[in-house]
Amino acid sequence: MIYFVEVETGDEQIDPLDSPIYMQVYGTTTTTPKLFLESKQMSFKQNSVSKFTISSNNVGEVKSIILF
Image (cartoon, rainbow, N blue to C red; front, side, top):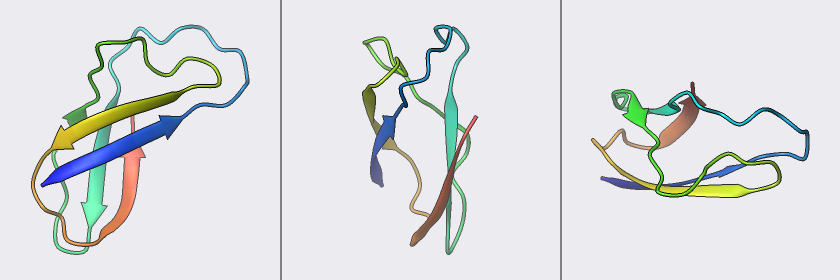
């Protein structure tokens, strides 16, 4: 299954993120493993949208997504 993910950040000034960011998708039938959000560009900057294409198992209808 291919998931297209967009993460929009707010306008609050924060220090640049240097830690890896992961996500997990929870659905009606199962959950994905922890998925690394890897980008060739700097992601999660102030007032920006970071886009990711993730391939993982089908979870059924998506109920929630957790970023950590």
